[in-house]
Image (cartoon, rainbow, N blue to C red; front, side, top):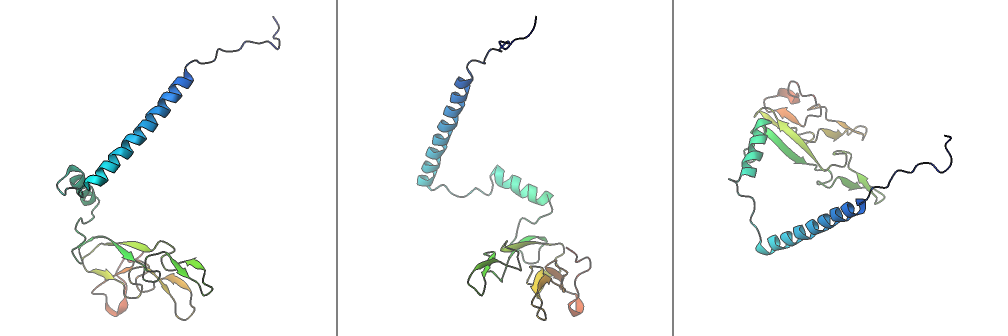
Length: 169
């Protein structure tokens, strides 16, 4: 039997619109319930997370497994620290001579840098103040700090301004 223009049409699925409308209703209801909960939490002025809570202990355990000190207040302790860019004061941008906002050439628009102290003898590089980039006075160009090789840290016992061994990025 030859095929004609009046071929077989498969039946259309029924009830698809019902499922879509139910999902939409559930999402909208969840949104309003969450909004209501957030407003009640603001009215009660909920305190900060309890330091002995499960979430706090889990976060501390995860940091310790990664080798990060969970007590950033101890000076010189191994761990990750955030160093704010002194060129743009943490904003990530500076004003050009024409008054236009430009990306900071030291932090490349980030505003800060994370550094990790591997050894308690590590201290911030005085040339780049931990950012790893400096402006060269002879050319005015910006580049990797020659004192710390871009690491942002030097050993406190490094003589003559030498960078610490293995001071690569």
